[in-house]
Length: 247
Image 1 (cartoon, rainbow, N blue to C red):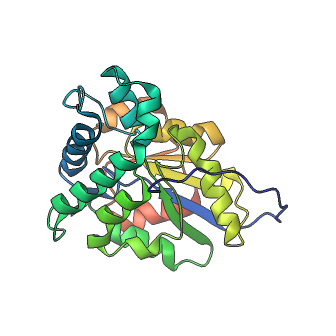
Image 2 (cartoon, rainbow, N blue to C red; image 1 turned 180 degrees about the vertical axis):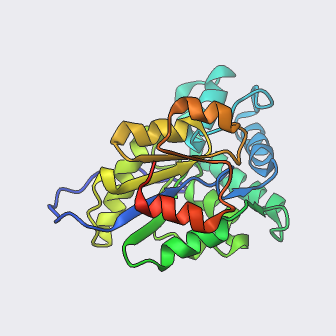
């Protein structure tokens, strides 16, 4: 299985004073310059016989599960067939994504990302992870060339649930498995789309938007994130604001 379903545990944990920072991948940490869309097109065509209206589909902020379901439903594929072939589809997607990423030269790490992530990881009061629409295998392929992949200790993926808003509790449960019961108000979700901000708002996390994706700053500001950065290049300022919780 290339994607996992999650069910919550029931054990009681004492609250943790650690703060959990969860990063989106595409448009926030890296750009893979269209490799994801191209890999999906090949996977959908090979698995379902059509890629649907993929050239017009808005990938921004959507989970991989949602992308498959919405594109194939719109193309008239039966819901049962969509579910039955999901593993096959993601296997082709991963194969094609790995081929397109190749030696990693296609992956562009966005400004300041490496330094910000490493600074946060080095702090004793933080836990750094991912909250991404990518399935786990896709996330690994995109981040492995950057050297950042091993730094993310917690993650909720786009194969865990089609609805991005349901991913924060999954990340929280996985933090608990490491001994940290992080309350949602001590969770910060960092992404480049209005859906990332909505995801944070839905659970009471701190919402941080960064305008390094396809949504400009003047569009993101209308979502009223707690923090908005044009990019993460001013590492000292970014880390200070993230860790101090300043608006």
